[in-house]
Structures are given as structure tokens and as C-alpha cells.
Length: 245
Image 1 (cartoon, rainbow, N blue to C red):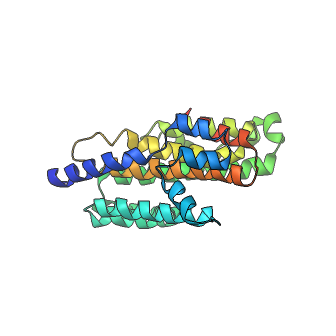
Image 2: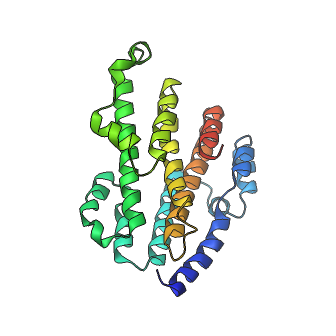
């Protein structure tokens, strides 16, 4: 990205970053009722929607917000290849197809795709094994051995975070908190770009904001869902702790 393009993107993201709901506020609102939450979030899209409608379909609202987020980030990127990434980002197999074209892609984006796919491979392996073995996992660790190709990806990858992610995900499964795995994955995607966003003339800040905002929306959606349907708030608190703790 050239200087003028990155300066514009930095300014835009600096404004948009203020729409992220802070971890401390998330921890506060999970203890409230829905009406109190909306008042606490009076500067957000949620409050505006609540003012407009009596019957609120939260799922539709969050889908629309995530679509708008993707469109904003695409518009900030000058490279056609990076915009193509956003068209495929929620389709892992489609992302996998981008790697052979890596000559067209900037180094950071190629590294991220490889990192993301390793994380997904880890999750798939752990979920399948946990389902197959259940309590046997805790009795006979040898039955849970990693395939050699996946072991190499995890422990010899260019990014040491793959090993840490594997250890954290494995611990979550041991505690039978499988619902936290998705949020753990999203946290690591944000952290990948956290390290890249300060690099000079890099589009990393745009990718960082996309994943940080998307995760923020998912946590808020989790809170709203728990309040709207009287679900277990303790699980929501655990989600917040995994993501922002």
C-alpha cells in the first residue's frame, strides 16, 4: 500500500476502532437485563434498532452488520487479491485454493491463510477425536496421537502460536467446554494481525480491524442471545474470559 492509501486507511480504522465494545463493558452488561444492556450500548447499532422496532430479529441485524463490516474493509484495500480474500474468508476450503496463487498475494496474507488453515485442521482433529474417544482420551493418551503431518504443522510451523493454540484447545476439550473453541480460534486470528498492524505501509491494520470487530460482534451476539432467551450467563462470562481475559 502506498503512503496516501495507508494514511487514509489508518484514519478510517482509527474512527471505526471506537465502535469496538470494551472487555470491561462486556463484563458489565452480561450481568444486566436486555433493556439495561441496550441503554449501556446506546451509541451502537443495537440501540438504534431497538428504537425503530418493537419486534427485533437480532440474528438478521448481526448478519447485516457483519456484511457491512466486510464491505467497509474491502473498500479500504487497493489490491484486488486482498479483496478476493474477503470474499472467501468464511469458506475455509475456498481459502485453501488461494495458496497456489500465492505469487499474487502479499507475504502477510499468505502467512495468515496458512496459519488459519492449520488452526482449522487442529480444531477438526480435536473435535473428531474427542467425539470418538470421549472418556478413553483421559485413560489412554496414546490413542490421541497426532498424525505426523499435523504434528509437523503445529510444532514446526513458521508461527509459534499454532503450538500454543493446540495446547489451549486441548485443555478446553479436557474441561468439556467445547463451545469455547470457536471463540478461541477467533481470538488467535485477531492476535495474528495484532502483530502485523503496526508495520509500515502494511494492510495489516485493516485485517486486524475486520477480525477484531467480527469477534466483538460475535461476543455481543452471544450476550444478547443469553439475555433474550434466558440462557446460562456463566457460559457467556467464560466466552468473554477466553477472548479478552
